[in-house]
Image (cartoon, rainbow, N blue to C red):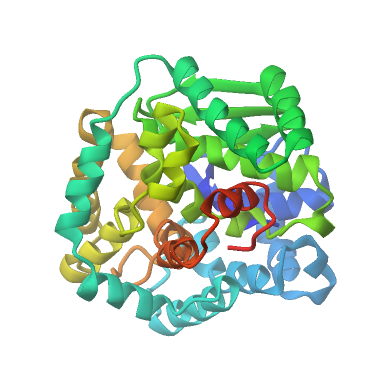
Length: 370
């Protein structure tokens, strides 16, 4: 069970439940409808869901034991408090245990990384860089996508990956769907064939970020046998690779010049709104839900401008607080930190490699574990 399911909640009878809890029940109960309220509530009330979270018998339904442990520890918050509307007090020990499991799952030190960002990063300078990239916008998503694939195909051909280019073109031409929606950008696969790329704005960086995900997933999941590529779970899919290409090679892709790969800047230029909101909440947050929502809303306005709606702000608020209690401001969902974690590592990887074109090609193909 990949944790990426937890981007989304399902609305049931004026309450919200994380989809992974429903996914788990559905694996064994085979509901006719994903939001079959009768079955979901029955198995929460009779203890079936809690039993599945506790029992080693169901471990095979999870991606790793840490996923099972996180869902079990967060059960009082996500199921009892947020779905069943019971009064559950914030528990620091529970929060610490959830973070401990996340640290094991993502191989990070959550507190150390957050403190480093709060104290060492030049957030103002990075925000200026982010805003500079925001000004680069395309007028036609199809033309911008064609520029992207021309660049990728040219790179792969130069590195002698002719068969891979042919497979990529053959798959993407009939199966890629591009959509502009005033919501959250993302990549979705349907039945392992149709791949939908949704973008919430017309910046090159957003489009290129999502298309890198599409290319990387195609090779790792569809084209290659998982034994010959770095097949990590989609939970740990390399957000930093997508950000690295989108920000450091945006101008090269637009120009269609793969030789610019050797000349690209390898200084930190990426600004992550997620990690910055974490940092702001650590500095200015309270234990008051209304005040914390307002802080997050004001921070999101710096990135979303007129695209921000109350629904989208609520979506992000829930996304930051998933697995954790609303009445605190120290613990948030570390998945969002993937936009920041590993970024310096990929910069070092390219700084220390003399053949940057070959390295980038192998990263795209999933032949390098990032």
